[in-house]
Image (cartoon, rainbow, N blue to C red; front, side, top):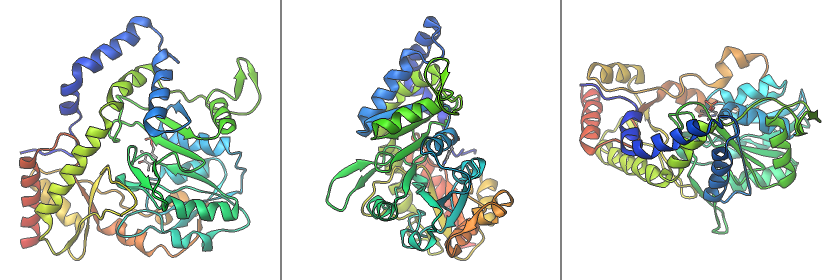
Length: 375
Ligand SMILES: *Cc1c(COP(=O)(O)O)cnc(C)c1O
């Protein structure tokens, strides 16, 4: 038996006709760079999210870097980031000569501890980057309130929660990525809206900022061959946009499949005392980019090995908190107590989660997990 983390082939098979013809159109037109599909996708994603502006770029890491460049953050400026996240978030901060200020995450939502943000702000702090980890969003009203009080920018790293919806304290609903000054996302194949290569996008509600973002993605030019600022070259590929135009229409049903699979896991694993199941907070929908367990007593590495021996894949996102990573040790500042990040790094494990999971396969996975804890 071999149960993988993902089933991108199975997903493709169901939409092969639409995908193949959409890609073929690009090849037939030979408009490989900035073809019409790029603009239609930007428009379609903006419509879907309820965002005024969406600008495509080459990948999610670039999206974060471009956001920080467009906001004119300067070397030495501080950017608050959670210490339990994918490294790309803090990496671009370092790449631009900015200082990542690490704060902790909440153990049940895996998201930034809002109660630690204010104490970690200094006179150099310019931005906060909440990461909507594993498919569930952070508490944006509180983050926006702190940001406006201290005149900080908010850059949402929405690489893992595209499609998730936030309910504001007044009952209004917004898609994650459209609440902060800038939102960033990734279309890496394994993300909830994945293309067939690399891709990313930036969203904002501010016309001036949108124009600056577009300039940064295109060598700092507004008019061809007239370069006003230092930018970079980061484009969403036309073939990827053609794939995304098809898959965006399925995103809500993909999110539902993931959510349903999560409920099945929760039911099957509800009786296992040694694990903490992922929690659902009240003000964010959950699109289950990952289904992540925490082990209370036993070793998650032993569980990983046991599952592998049964042919069940699992992954550890993430095995090391950023404060312990070599790359960040000399450039970051510890903004707060990081106990939860360190605890999570040693106790989390993610089970297979994707749009093609069947209840039968989930039963096999859950039975293997249950067997491990009986030993
Ligand atoms: C995937 C991811 C990124 C980077 O996206 P790429 O397209 O791989 O560059 C950034 N932040 C988070 C939280 C991610 O999961």
